[in-house]
Amino acid sequence: MPALDQLRLKHPEIAADFTIDQHWERYGADEHGMWRTLYERQAKVLPGRAAQEFLDGLAKLDLVSDRIPEFERLSDGLEKLTGWRVVAVPSLVPDDIFFDHLAHRRFPAGQFIRTPQQIDYIEEPDVFHDVFGHVPMLAHPVFADYMQAYGKGGQRALSEFGALKNLARLYWYTVEFGLIEKPEGLRIYGSGIVSSRTESIYAVESPSPNRIRFDLERVMRTNYRIDDFQESYFVIGSFEDLFQETYKDFAALYTKLASGPNYSPGDVLAGDRVHHRGTHTYIGGSHAA
Ligand code: HBI
Ligand code: FE
Image 1 (cartoon, rainbow, N blue to C red):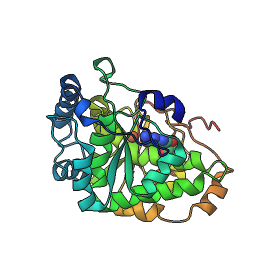
Image 2: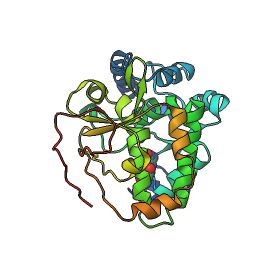
Image 3: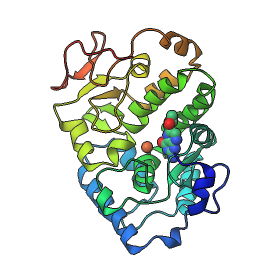
């Protein structure tokens, strides 16, 4: 992640909290066109796969395919619903800055949009991942509170050795790659999935990955991979359940997690409640630290 003075070369107005001006007027037709291409692809795959809460958020916020959203207007609508605003940042920001924004109900969104060469894979979050992927769920009152609690929890975890790694896994397996069980079947709410066409199909339809009931300690002991489709997804019962299970002081849990096993992304354990056992799992698994 580049340092602040390095980013200042490209974004002279960057603030100490890493926010920049969105400069919406500077997006070109090709950039709005990329948003449209990505939006239209997702509009085809998400019905029947994404959680209704996500689809409702998209509709309530009036996110449309035509153009990259203007953060100020988007934020005015979002703030009325749940008190959150969206602020522009160059891309990834340091952990402490990220947590401070979330703790204050500000979602930092990458200002740039991917190029045609990056259409299916980018290393850093762009405006499509951050706004299309994350912001609809922030229109949901319970999820909105969960995200703020994560930010506050992150601020505390920074001072505790090892805790950040455990907490980042929770974020990864819920906010980024979470599934939810609905009467009609498993549905996606994780932003890393809803912003990817191929993973939107893979996450709910492929026989390959494990789909395992969410358990806080289990998730916090599980490593994740950032360079490929997930080998395991964790399934919540409802956003209320997720919030209840995580809205507590993690101090005792972090102490417990400091010893005992860490699991590999593909492991299936004897105690897991398995919705679906992936075809790519090795029985027993490896217990890498
Ligand atoms: N910055 N912009 C941005 N977006 C993220 O999702 C993000 C970040 N910085 C740190 C971070 N995520 C994670 O390392 C924490 O959730 C642990
Ligand atoms: Fe993300």
